[in-house]
Image 1 (spheres, helix red, strand yellow):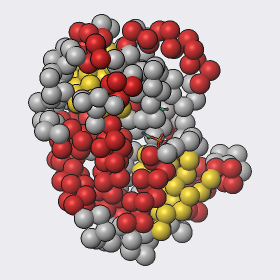
Image 2 (cartoon, rainbow, N blue to C red):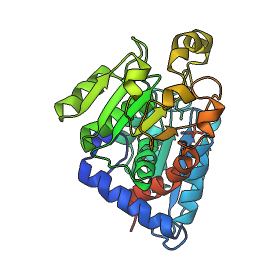
Image 3 (cartoon, rainbow, N blue to C red):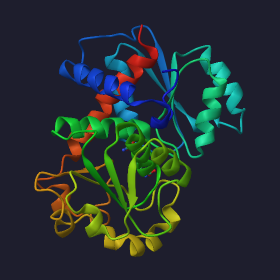
Image 4 (spheres, helix red, strand yellow):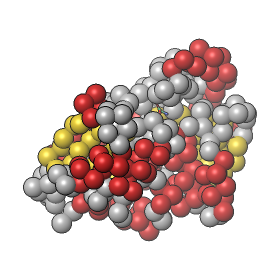
Length: 299
Ligand code: CP
Ligand code: NVA
């Protein structure tokens, strides 16, 4: 890979290779330092716990130096252009992770930079999240080609990356959410053109029925905070609660990318219940991203 910007840019074989590498790296976190002597910059336009910390720890464990570059200092696109930032950073560092609003910020940076760019979340997608998510599914005995995934809630960046993954891996993806909040139409079309089964099902019970994996995300994403109360009313029928999750398979797993708004999109009894593997999932961000970085920047 040259960059890691969207799951749609890679294929099934590359995903499988990355899952295997992530599993190997997870066995002994400090066994290998293939990025020794390198530096990876991390730019954040939005808040983060998991992405910030898992990248910083992962870069350190791979032998490289993680450099947090705040946008308060560099003011991307205001103090200087994205193009110039990409060119300048490429003279210092060996890779750049960026979390930003417009997806074009990420692709413009990749076009300018001479070093690999990793998408740590944009308004359009969140590919690192889905790599950790599917690694978690595999660890919990799910077949990434045969499983049924019910994504319940907002068809935003995380859902969009699940759509991309369905296009590559061939599992059945059901999107259960209110009309008007479906995933990106172009990404849906592209996944279906690759043969993916992605169904939009407005009834949450129907969407979850018999699923192997039940997933949710916040109802108001970063940047949509003003819409939170309006969205809460609209999305409440899609809350992951015990009743809804009981419609999935007996051995279904519940995933949430986190941060969770307990009591909104997921109840405490589901988040802390027997189906939930959300903290395994959060941990797997670390291992999956280390695999991505080894592939992009390893010696
Ligand atoms: N899931 C995730 O990306 O979490 P953060 O926003 O805390 O990085
Ligand atoms: N959809 C959420 C994901 C957070 C990891 C957001 O963009 O805020």
